[in-house]
Length: 179
Image (cartoon, rainbow, N blue to C red):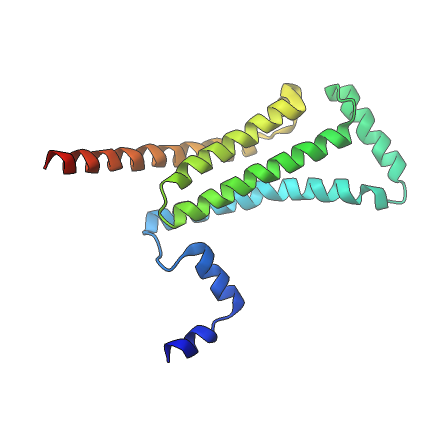
């Protein structure tokens, strides 16, 4: 009977169980991870749209005009020698950082303490990659306050969670060594 039920699961159900595990976390963790995931969707969608624009730019009817405009705006406003190349590198760096953040959310859902650190590291990587690849002028003019508020508040929230989880672990370890 159990084997029959196992075989009736869809691929999606098996994948979901593989990613999220068998146990649901407590309510606060579920709400936190879902909120973090919604923030992740919002932020990663901008990077995916940027990548899609860059990749499909060559298929436009006036592709050369658009490319020259990118280069002109990049050089005049931000001092970029090749704006398209820098945006491509930046987008891939951002997508790598957002992959770390998604992995962190999965770890947090599965009650792994290291997920909190990965989340904070991923968000710091998002900010630093923009600063190092595109510069402070681009960062100050193009990154919206909404994006910064979402990144900052979620990093602070999960950072506090990391401190709380690791401190509670130390208290439990100290208590067991005293006994």
